[in-house]
Length: 266
Image 1 (cartoon, rainbow, N blue to C red):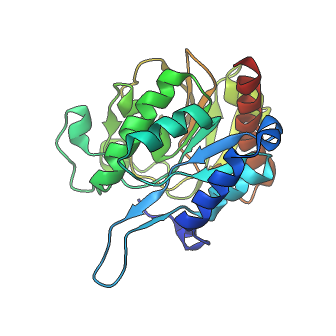
Image 2 (cartoon, rainbow, N blue to C red):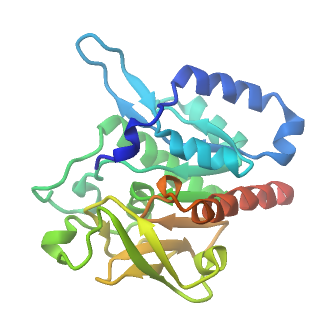
């Protein structure tokens, strides 16, 4: 899917790698400010342009504003880099993007599907599987929620309007109901919220060790949490892009606090 806030400042890979090196070398800073990896958008080389790695700046800002050190992760097929991420990063944010190839969950594609670049799909598929196994904190946003479900063995509703209906417009603000007692209800301090989303797909059958904790009026799964392992929150909307800063900071602040708690226990 496309995001209206992709026009915000892109984070250039070189700057991210410099920040990564600086953060890794600063032990004192890492003790109070966890390193949080953020997945990225991969754009292949064009006729007169090199390949690019970028991320909507809202993700970076949300992590930094809540005390984390944001580290943008390039889409790269390198085992050394993958191992470094798993060893050194304290948390992970999985960002939005295009659709997961339906073949990944045993289906043929609906006509509306716009699949991820294969380079990004393969990189994030491996990263998510290994990150979940590590038990370290993770926040999945939009595609990040969907991708986690598929990697965990779940399936997808490929097109909400044609398969579920148009009762709720999932490409703008709408309300969700949150399960009482869930991690999200505790984080937001309530069982309802107004959210900003931009998607046409949704989680269908749940993957292993996941449970739905919020739904919209039409029954679409809007949030999940992990049932085993460390902190894992997955939302179908975009808290980092919302004007409601209290909502944004509640979610991203929870991730940062979970990273600090996880670091202390290791």
